[in-house]
Image (cartoon, rainbow, N blue to C red):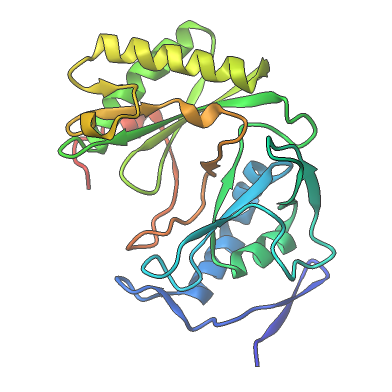
Length: 260
C-alpha cells in the first residue's frame, strides 16, 4: 500500500518510493522527493504563477519521456489550475503555488518547465532567456565564454543577467524584463544572438540548423516565444545521473576551465 503523508494540511499518496529512477547512481524516487522538499524554498519562487509543463519520466530517463501540458488526470481539486491561451484554443494548466503542490507534482516524476511570462498577463514577457547549447567537440567551457560576452552586451543595454547550468551540457542565461511582449523580447534576443555570431564567428551559431552545430555554441534565442518553456532553476533533469539546472555565480562561469 502506497504511503500517505500530510504536507501543509494536504494529504498526499506517494508511490513507488523504492523505484530506482537513475540506474547509473542508484538514485531512487524517495530521494527525488527528498530533494524537492529540501530545495522547495528556493525553487517555488521560480514556479509560482507560471503555468507548468511537465516533462515526465516515470520509469527513469531510459524509459518513456513525454511532455504533459494540460492538467493531468487525477489532479487533486486543491491544486491551482488556470486557463491558458494557445493558438489552437485555450487549455487548462497547473500552477505550482506551494509546497504541497510541488510534492504532488514531484511524485509524478517530472522536469519542471515554465514560460517567460506570468499567468496574470500572458501577453507580456517578464524575463529573457538564452539557452547556450554546445555542439561537440565544444563544451560548457565554450558556453562560459559566450555567456560572459552576452552578460556584458546585456549590461550595455542596462539588463542584468544571471547564469545557471542547463542540467545537461550547457548554460542558461536569464534576465528580468518589463513592458515587453514575447514577440519583442524574441526579436531582441535574436538580434543579440546574431551579434554574438558576428563577434565570434568560429564559435557561435544563432541558426537552428543542426548540421552547422559541431564545434560551436548554439545561442538559442527562440525560447522567448510565448509558446515555449525552459527548464526552471533547481529542477532535476531526465539524464543518466540526477543532474540539476543549478544557478552559478559569474565568478564560477569565468573560472570554468574543464567540462567536468
